[in-house]
Length: 86
Image (tube, rainbow, N blue to C red; front, side):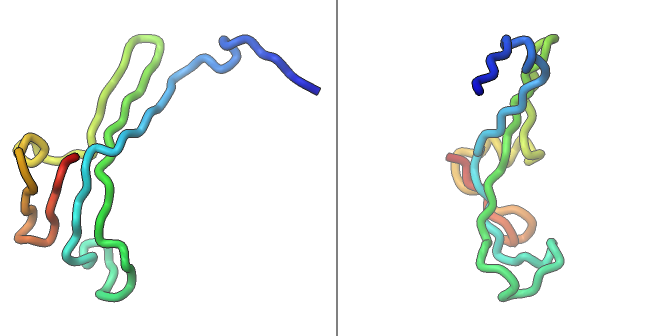
């Protein structure tokens, strides 16, 4: 059986997630993990676009503007993290 519904049946806010760079972690201690608990030391930095009836909202992962606007890799928190945008 095929069920066809009008697009209005799915109307409402939409969420889009984008990869806006990466953070390389030298230590995972800030997450309560010890050395060797995980092989993952690089995380993506998300950006979000929310589309709704009144318009659109763009949000980022919360990096300081000085870090996000930098031309090259940025060392954060005494070398515990390095941010590099694409």
